[in-house]
Image (spheres, rainbow, N blue to C red):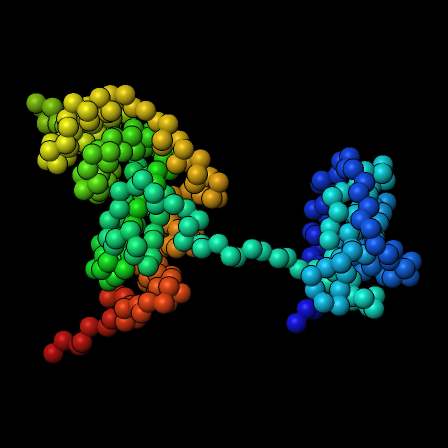
Length: 327
């Protein structure tokens, strides 16, 4: 049922920030009677707490898609005559009810909000009912925590019902994150298995990367970016050797350090409102931070149900289980 709008004070105040020169495009339709326009103006002044001197202009009626209501455009101008972008309201045909609502297109499959195309995957097949796309920074400690705790648990709980892919989102404050992303993606070009093992290893060792090996005297030098990059290159080459990839091709890719693809991934994440890591998209539902497994499992279960699949039995956090009393 459509109800009269309860307008937030910021609704019209926000429009004042958009003052500028706008072309006047009056829509065809009957004018709003002066007494009704006055009631609209008084209501909006009360609800929006407009500054002194602000003037409200009520446009003509135009047809709407809501039965019993027409659309009207309301603009606010300041004392200098600068007008805001118009706001659209619904006015009942009897002139007694003003309403506002937002309409969104939800026809698209949220699972397709962020693509897994071209990325190495683990877990279920390409047609798995749930797709998790994670934006990851290999130097991020919270990413390492999520990676270590969550993904083995997902595989154990959901088997092939969940497919997991990573996209790169190295943060500027992490000095070797970009280099690490380039290295593992060089490996991904030839071996998806090698890519994931390298990611697992880097996340597990992130706290030590950049620390040089002890010298002859047993002392350890200071961590450095140069040392971190050397260790990342060595780790990637060793994993490539184990996967029997084309080593000259891998070496050339590592040496080139082409960041174009990584920056495109960052650009994609930014367009999806990713501004920190880790960020997960679970069938399009954005989840930020290293949240408890129980919460993320609940989101996955809901996604499975939406896909017509039966989730596993309810998850019980082992930490919540009270051990039996000792005798």
